[in-house]
Length: 311
Length: 302
Image (cartoon, rainbow over all chains, first blue to last red; front, side):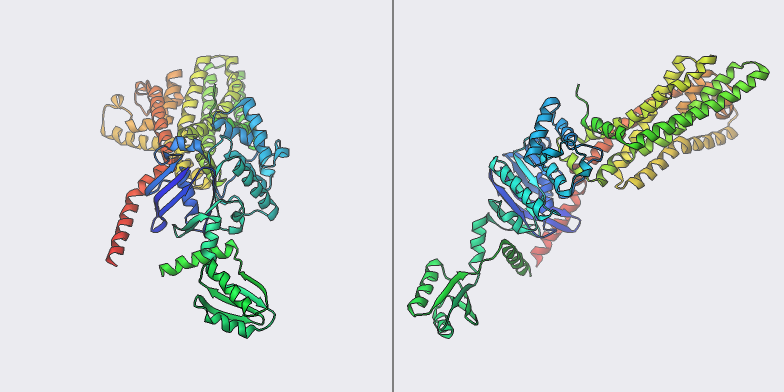
């Protein structure tokens, strides 16, 4: 659905995008993650036809997006990170205005507005003035606006920024609905936990480069391999440590009361053998598990690593 | 018929605002007060010396001048914020991300401002019709004048919209627009007369003098020409003629209208080009390439 190849963009001396590659298939929700200033918004603006890249290629649905700007805009729905609304306009009229740009008028747009407002849970705001809506409601209204011409690809730049937890929850549900409707979505955030639950794929961007890309599980397992294993015992801590240190794939061993933390580089089979070994040697184990990392930690880990590489 | 969506939306927004009501109120009030004042002065004179038909013409000219000045102040303020306001309210990016072309956005914005001004011009038609009570001015004159005002409104509006796309903030854009409009309306005229003054002092044949072509850039010349053509050599125009033959003003209004329309088209196309975010990129493209090349060379050297 969306293919980005070797995309580059420089603002003055600042290199915003440095040979960025990205691929999103039909029906995927792609979480675009990176710290502020990593190049997320720049990429999204280029894909939306609001910015021209210095070099590189963008294909939307097989079509060269940079050359066919007008056709591109019929295929995509873009929601910027910061946007305003017109004062003195009702929610329904707001949608009617954007509908009329796409040639949808009269009865058709009224029905469509109602459906879209229902989709974003604003059906009771049909006759309310836009400037009286809360920030979260405006965000949802803007999302409804993106959908007015039934685009195949949605580009949402930080759709949940500045929202309270309740509004965020609602936004998540709406995105889930859109996913079920078969829309392809590129959604960005600098907060990972926001995206973890709804995305099918994730890409982490750092200083204009894609650091890693894949399904949520892939990324989780790729990074969690380095997570320490935590073993809790009731007694015989010293014996356990002694045993553990004999195993070659065990790295650093740290002990705190009955809680032993080890760095383990082996695969799953070796991990199972490690546990078996401990049990066979009569170590009373209460729990044995890898330290669970949230996406947040993974994110910090990945971006840290890329910083180290650069140094 | 499909109406330009921006025009439709802007008009809807405009008539809902209190500002619009105030604008109509003050515009009609100022013009009516002017009309009453001039009318009163003329009628008082009529008690002593009988009705002087020429005075009706002065009434008409006085009204036209008041209206021209009012338009000169209203049109730049309406149009110079057209694009800036969208940018400041952060609605521009959303508008640009739709399939609407920048040219239709600009035309929609311009037409929305112009339609408001046309409403003002139509509102004041009844005030002009006072002149029919006495005679001396016919309907054709008023229609000609109104058409000229509409063309000038489009011209000044295009200047405003163009400035609005070039300058980021509304306040600065409005200030620049007023500056440019004042220069075009008054500055050029002053320069023209200074240059004529010097020519007269050098030349002996004042009758064959021609206006410098540049002076037609100012709609003021067209406006004066229109009035001179409508009423012939009135004493009031002596100052403008400076002893030159009134023939030089013969086609002034037409030339002025043609120049204003051509400039408007250029300004509108320029604004549409400037508004397109992709075009701005092309301008910087070469610089960027040079930069990335030099950076690449730097890497290789390392």
